[in-house]
Image (tube, rainbow, N blue to C red):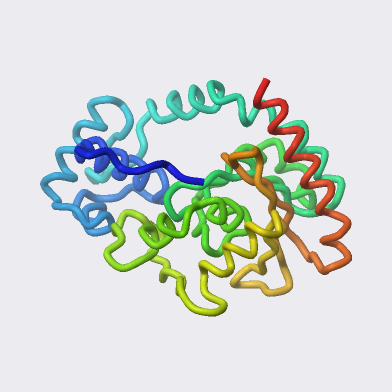
Length: 257
């Protein structure tokens, strides 16, 4: 999966403005101008101008403490983009059918080095599925995510080196995670090659080695990935993998028509 080569003369104001907007949406609490500037590695005066512009457009707003949070227009943008893409509308039905396996069901996309979950449902909490099935409150480092690894595996080694290598933009890792070791036997590039070859990823949660995520890509040129999370041993993997692959085909077929 790749976003292509950068243009010869990229619009830095647009790039930095979108970085500010994404960080604002991903941050749990309202955030001040200087704190956001430090997070993104940008000049505070530049961030201040960008935030004022976003506020003028309704994409940001200030609270009583003069800190910034997402504005009402962000909900319009989110709803319009989800409706326009058709992905979520096509995916909800097939994804709900996976709940019968008793594992958490998720679908996500890749943004820089973060996984953004469009769908996340836990069958052990059926009363919450309607409320929480659509989306997840925060992004998650892609290098530690089954869905993220599945999508990163579709990216060229050159793009991975640019994303995680020396000199990477501070904005590329909003969670301040340490970048993975790329080269050498057992390095991150080898791991991604294995995922690409197998056609799926199976990874344990960093905080809970007894919980795994099994994930597969969606689309011939993957634009999303879906996964099941829980206690997944080899036998369970063999049971779940055909269902995941079939669901991915159903979503792609519905999205393409």
